[in-house]
Length: 511
Image (tube, rainbow, N blue to C red):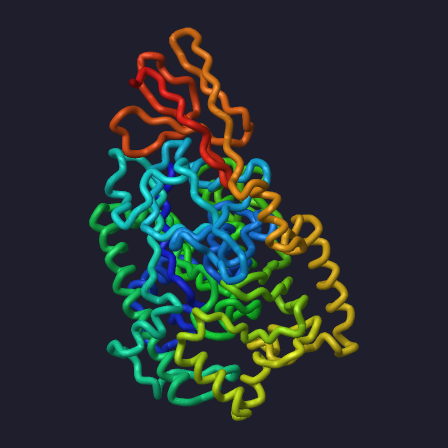
């Protein structure tokens, strides 16, 4: 029996805020119940410390630097403009050959796939991706007995909640929170930390509603449930940073029938592994184009990962290119723009009281030495951290002779990865855009061809890796074409592909 799979996605959260990772600041009973019934992963990472590029990796099993989705953001579904002040329009990168959203493979095998409701994949999602993607999307809308994959995104703990909910009720006292050494310890910092914990309580309540629905429907025991964050925490030096505070995420997986319940797993687990793992659990062989590894299921990869790779490029209106590779013990970071402070002047983040406070302290020379490291210029060209002895990544070892072998090994490992994965961050963004949109518009897929034989209709696209979709009059959802259609049907059909404009619709038996 194919498993049902549910994803519960918390925005902008690091593992260190959660009870299952040792933080007792606030009780989160719903999330804790999943961890008691599941497996807690100690080393789960996003390849980019911000949402849209990270989500492109999750939904394709590919690195954003390979896809061309490494900048935040490329396709802007929230505005007709993107970043006009630096001349960057909203655009969908033309992804490499064969790349699709992995939900297409599930849908072809009969899975009912829903997304509620945030997409933000850094490209325009083709209509082949979901059976339903809206605030009302739910497994309860599926055909009877169909297996399902359902995503629920929770915005209540997003970065913006720190200032938008800053005057709401606090569920923890600012005096009770622990201030990490990279922040100054003052009233403003403590208040924002307390707001985040309070938002986690609100998150926990919302997740509890979904768990209750699964149990009401008799689906909880036999379902696979993921709880994870889409990148690191909402604060400065968390989100948009290649330190573990920005890349490391909480990840709990409840297996079918609560297998391995109450255990911990320390494997290196990247977002690029999510898509192949989920397909493997559904009994579908992951496409060879995917760069991640299936960690579990029928097609689990026997070779485990030795490294995690990560990137930084543009965040909104600001560019700062960095690359990183992390082993279990060490992290190597390369800074390409050493003249720019890590404390990028991103307008969006500067709405946060904590950010305003730290900027004011730095400007007046009153910021303590450790917090001030984040503001330093020039940045070092290379950073090396011993995560075992320096988990907050405060002591750069790149210049110490006894770590030279480690530095060289990680430097070469990063270079090889960038070459093997065709890192598009080496190409200026405007040059990429001109290649993808030669006339200022995406290329358009050619019309479908049709062959009628033995009372069946074959549909053919001129682009081999385009997806053909079709629907009958009155259908709300496009179906994925996988076999010839009956010639007694009336239908519309077209070809779709990430980065391309859809083909014109082919109409059959319709006026």
